[in-house]
Each structure stands twice: as C-alpha cells, then as structure tokens.
Image 1 (cartoon, rainbow, N blue to C red):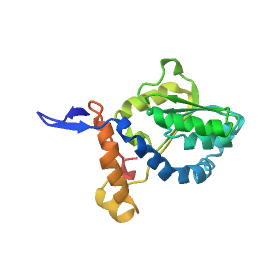
Image 2 (image 1 turned 180 degrees about the horizontal axis):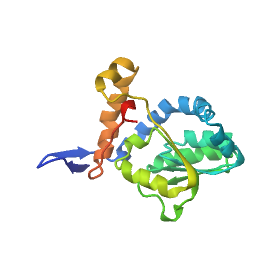
Image 3 (image 1 turned 120 degrees about the vertical axis):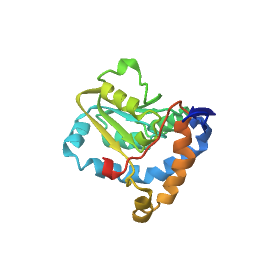
Image 4 (image 1 turned 180 degrees about the vertical axis):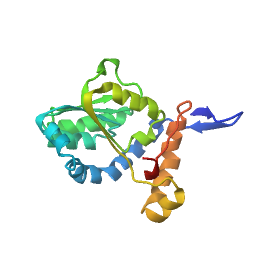
Length: 209
C-alpha cells in the first residue's frame, strides 16, 4: 500500500493496480459491449479520421486494458498499425492472445506507463486513442504531455470518457447506473490513484468540458 499526505499528518492509503487483477476482467466485460458494437459507429461520426485509418496510419491505444478496443481497430482498419499500451502486464497478455487468435498482424501489445511512455516515441503516432482511461490517471497532466509528445504534427488525440455532470446530485438524478459507477470510482479509481504520491483521479462534468 502507498500513502499520500493531504495535509498535516493525514495519510490516505492507496492500493496498487496489481491488487485488482481479477477486477480488470470484470471491467473489460462491462466495456466490451460498447467497444465491440459502438466504437466504430462513434468513429464514423468523424469521416476524415475514418478515412485516415482506412488508408493506414500509426495508432497508439493508451490504457487499452485487455485490448478490446485495440482488436476492434485492428480488425476494422488492417492498413493501420495499432500499438496497445497498458500498465498491467496481465491485461496486456490477455489482449495479445486475443490479437494472435484472430491472426491480427497489425496489433501489438506492450506494458507501459501512460505518464512515462518510451523516450524514442517522439512524434511517432498519427492517432492517440484512450477509452475510459484518462480520468483514472494519477497524473493526468503528465499523461496529456506524453500524448502531445508522441503525436505527429497535426496528429489526432481522441479520448472517450464517461458522460457525467459536475454535481453528484445531477449525476444521481439524471443518469442511469451512476450508483454503480460511483462504487467503482470509490473502490478502484481513487485507491489506485492515491497509491501514487500526490496522485489524483477526477471525472470532469460536462459543465467543465
């Protein structure tokens, strides 16, 4: 367990993401329905991006989890090369096996920290994709700096985040299933963020976007 000092002698313990190994499979199942059925229709709303992917560009999927999004992109756009990155080795192994079972030669999986991507990745990717991952980062500012660094000039950053309001009351009254999401945030997102010194986790409401 890590600890973070908020003020004075107050210490808030955190939990390493490796402690949630089985939980990530559950999360993957929760998000796979959208990624398998909704990701491509979502990208279709951006014809220029879809055309680029069809012609062939370099893509990095940061926070890929068990690789559902990476596999969907790899299957749909065989001319593009997909590099899938996740902090948890167990998830990377699962994703790699999925890609191999489908014979996808254009998808690779590596273990890595979104806040400290390989130094040689300067201006490497035309498209940076993140699904349901940015708000979980302990250091979102560092992650965004890394996104900017690894993007080619004129490259595209595409982050899909859960819809929410700024006020808890609005979320509970206007959005379905928020009780479950708050439970996940409290028992997973916040502890893993606090495990990193001075880490934070925050889901910005639509009023702040």
